[in-house]
Image (cartoon, rainbow, N blue to C red; front, side, top):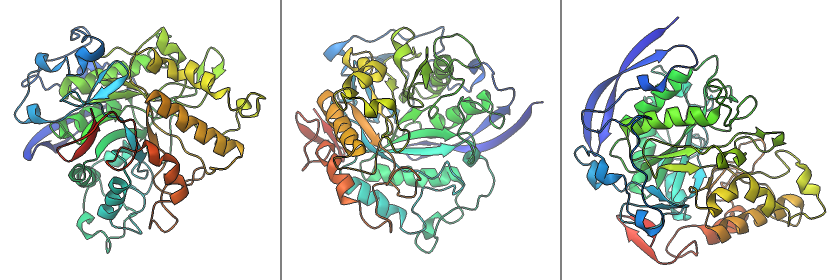
Length: 443
């Protein structure tokens, strides 16, 4: 049975508010992405059969090779979007941008709001993120949270009176607008289908593939022209039955990522597409979403070039006590483990790699602390971007960056990553630090 519903949603293009109607289909789990909404009246329509020519490699693609082939609607041409070139990310002017971010968890849970808003004002939290040198926020959400119905949100409205009565999309608008005003970028992360489940596949009994794609194209259209939103992380931590390169339309995550990625790029060809790995490849079990070995043989190919970012994750023994933590060669063995699963994609210049999640409770000389320091040295040496999980402390396996009262960043956690942060008075992946329209980037 197919249930159809429509909702007028505002299209935000630098202050231009246009009401558009999106028809969302709740159908079988798998429906061809070719049915997704197109913005062809203002863009060249891009499908898997009509790929844009790949851009040149090396320095020649520091300026986005796809831009001359895109028909830009009003104002989008002035937006400072990001694109990829080899294993790096660059802004519109050809300056390297290294993702150094933090996950603001909560919208994907039954709180239906970014965590911490029961104890602090949302603007204060954004101020602290920016003040501490992070340049990006990964904002998890669930498809359920996007439904047009009232939610009981975990928000203290005495501290956040301007958030009263907002829908989820309006709440996201407010966070994104505030982040942009502070020079921060946003990665939208579809973390779960519903607030109470994290699914191994991109679809579930509650959320079909078509709904997953439709929600993504709706969000891509909503933030078209708003260069605060620079990327979409299509699905969090594929695992279980998820495969890569098998050709099975029900389990092959690579093919699903291409379908969704192309649908997003058909309506907003300026966004980066973050694609995670799987968990098991030919009996090689790794962290959920972190197994990218098969991408060597079966790479993700998108309809717009210079948009793909691979995004694994890595964790310490508190999450799962992997055998390699107890190998006699630890921690020297870690580099080979990371190289073989995802680091090779960066080393070979296939695409940028951004570690989408990592963190641990220890910075000492125990296994967890040694792992975490070794990982950061590896990321720094290879100029690989990262997004720390999580900002908030109330997560079962990770300590968070903010203290228990949401008052200050936890010093010992923050200081570990301090030399990696992108900020004018901090050392980072820099050659030369320049300021660009309120944002700090590297030339």
